Image (cartoon, rainbow, N blue to C red; front, side):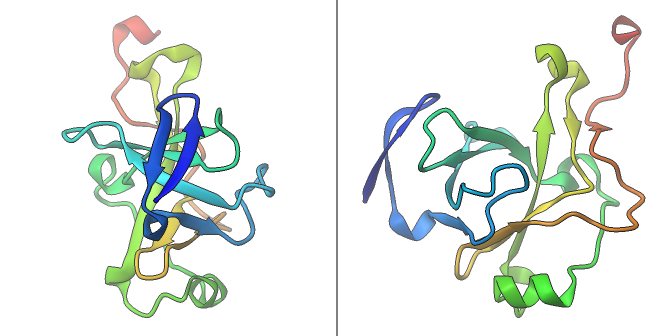
Length: 148
């Protein structure tokens, strides 16, 4: 077990086998290479991607298929090789979430740049999908009259 200090969760013990490794970092956070995925709670579709080196860096994520069942993309050969993925079952796919102005009702998912994790070796990458029909801001919840 490894002890890690976090702003959101305080000091936590991490099973070293659960550490997610981003060889190239994450776009705009290239110096961040080790994270852990922490569930929001047992019933929630949300998780946090908590940096192990920066206590106040945690990204909110979800599995996009929960909100976007038709979501799909092809994993390019280079990414597949870098991640060491041999079977589709080894992959977990996440989308980073944004909560504009703290309004949960306006939460959006970045479907253009999914986070792919190989559950066998815990290697991960955030892919930027070229020529994608997806954007960085897909609303999770339909617009309401209060949002306008």
